[in-house]
Image 1 (spheres, rainbow, N blue to C red):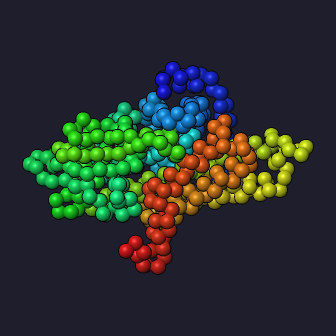
Image 2 (cartoon, rainbow, N blue to C red):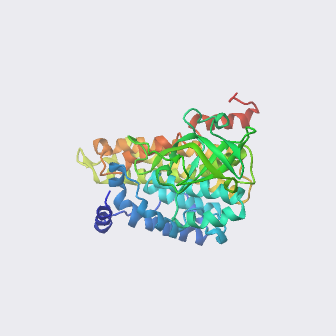
Image 3 (spheres, helix red, strand yellow):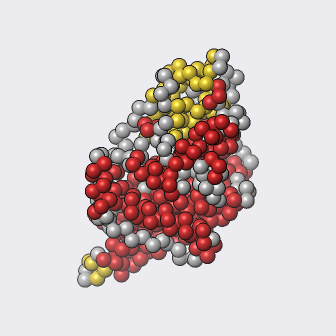
Length: 405
């Protein structure tokens, strides 16, 4: 898409985004003034910069990379990273609220932010050397650079331990071979955090840079979902990676799984934003659409859909708020994060489906956001641990028995 077309959409402000939030249980009373101010700044940015262009971007399958520096200025990339490395040192409630507002705009844009902060910056921050932190984190935080996270492989999704991507020793470097697929940000990334097996068969993380010979990032097209997100593969053919690019402070699946916990937390907040947008769109439509001489909002079945949607949004808000408090205290467990991710994504997808029905045939039109949210959420319910995998994580926590093997 040409920049001039984006500029035209921004100037037209044709969407007139008037979103003011959904808070039936006074959850704002549980937030600090700073939390609410930061949320408002991201909300206003979404209204001004994302809402006017997102339907066109989704229809044309275009990732609006022009927004990356603005997102960096907002501080949505790795807000929990210390200020000395370009972050804002914010807490996890702040991170969650940011993701909620961005995903109200679009799940694909929130995915880009989640990958950048939780899956690229987070492992460098936790497990990287001081040189790696100073080299990469400020550029990622500002949006100057985009990062990708390479874990999923063509033959190994829910079983990351079965990965075949590997590297061998070669003096001051290692030689990396293999591939990763369904990787957000891959086609445009400057660096990728790649998880591969070392010569001893243990998983380690490497920072692979664009331009390294043998490293390519073919784009995956023909998507029905996350169409405003850049998705692709990471392919490694005898890529020489300096040993200084290996994350020094972690070995084993603990590394990538700890990153996924942070990303999953962001998702459980983000999808609330998508659900809110569907709910508000359907409510407004129901009050304005007349059939049989009165607004369809006056009919019982439409009120049922709206009432259930508001109830589920409220439950998800309370679950996410409590999880955020636990994250801030360092007490949140992986199984608690799995419960929230699983519950909230299902909630948002169900609300999208019900609210689409309120709009009738108009619900599938790009003039309204619901069908786009619904299609996006079909990806969100699968990535970062599928709906069923999170069920089994909870099952293992409850029974002490591992259903994966």
